[in-house]
Length: 57
Image (cartoon, rainbow, N blue to C red; front, side, top):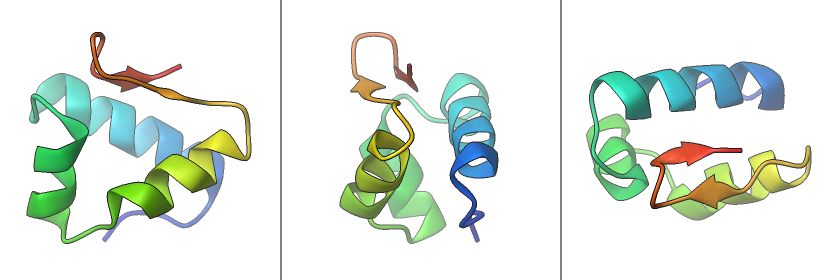
């Protein structure tokens, strides 16, 4: 389960993307998470998914 706190979520998601998953979609499938929820949560604190870098910045 992914954390609800946006800053913790950012750290966990970017680490998982870097170490284990080639895309946000694959991470969400494996973690049974909604990609739109992650995108919206992180957008609210100023971070946007960069598919070419496979990370939120």
